[in-house]
Image (tube, rainbow, N blue to C red; front, side, top):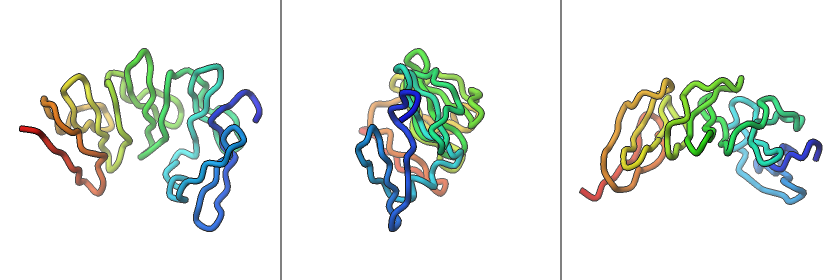
Length: 152
């Protein structure tokens, strides 16, 4: 692969299964993962930093993040100085890195946490539902519903 990209995009769909070659090894994912990349970009690594590559293995968003996750609902979670935030497909920070952890956006919200506070944030980073407790943070939202639990 060119340019030292580790997580790259040599992908094809074969019988409803997406096959990606990563460092020469096949990684097989359901075809839905291909569709989930609504920005047409995937995390890529160069010199220990994450950016985003397109289908031609070219960096569209330069590698400047400590870690990165897939785009979902038009935003991708990225880590800067140990904190997680979100960028759009142009690479612009839309929610400043402030969280200890994040999940993908779905239906306009993402699960995120800071310390023992966790809940859902909207596309501006505003908390729309939160909890100050220990317990399972549940999962990502889907169809405006999300599972949550508490030990209390």
